[in-house]
Image (cartoon, rainbow, N blue to C red; front, side, top):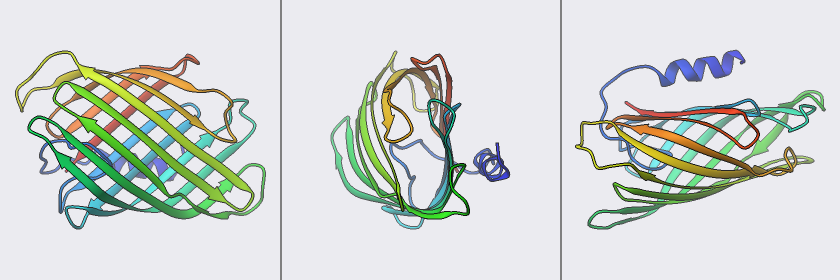
Length: 216
């Protein structure tokens, strides 16, 4: 793991004043959110700060590897996240997000670096017992198209109080163009608290997966 990812992971684990975990890629106004997603072929970490209730700016890093291990990519980006629309129900919430990134891409099959743009959208719906989400992100640089798509669904095992940890079962399917010809399917256990969650699982290629989110 490069120094870039070690820095982001360390920043994510910094403790501070926190409130409840919210769905989506940003927290409440004036909060800082850190997230990480780690597996052998995909490692991502980033931190952002919400300047308004709907806008956040941050930094991130992504490591990508092809299934045959011949191609690798490292993408360091500045990010902008926008909560485009939210629908609040009596016991549910639905959100539509825009996430954009821009930065420098390095790879083992070309020299130097390339400028990469990475716009994307995601949507989610959740109650205290059910969760569904989908996302698409386009990683584009000259001569490179690594488009990414994922869908998730899951349920909690039982109701808990606000300040108690709640276990969930999450199932995710995802795929990235140009680096994999397979659809990765991963069942994961999620443990969510009022200020963080962690997820652990093993995908259909027998690879481990670890995710986390923390708001402070």
